[in-house]
Image 1 (cartoon, one colour):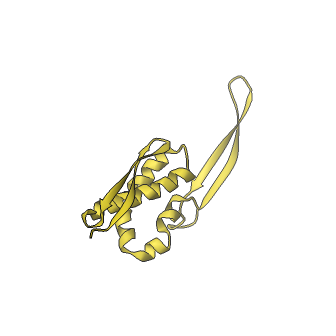
Image 2 (spheres, rainbow, N blue to C red):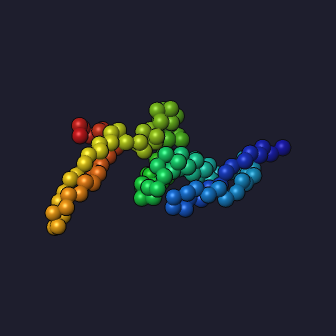
Image 3 (cartoon, rainbow, N blue to C red):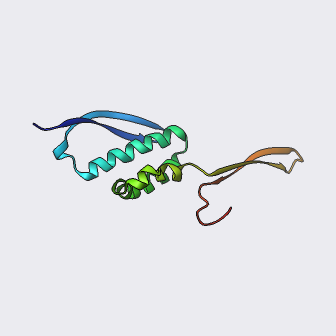
Length: 124
């Protein structure tokens, strides 16, 4: 008797996640590429929920996660250490103000950000 389970199929369109369908898959027919695609989509759903409105960031994360997911799945120590989660959350966020004067002499205040994702190659 074949084993069945439910796998959500997701599509990411810009700023929102759209759940297209639930598909019944036979466990024996499920290949590694399909399983990795499901894992990537589940991970991306979490990233999009934490960082809404950041489509360029979502695209960059998806490209990296698609290439790293096979390695993470083969090595449980990476999954246990939550390497992908660490890579997608900044280590430090610095917020600062930038005052400036326009040509008419009017003072404006803008916000500036420095996002530091990883200090693996040395201090900031």
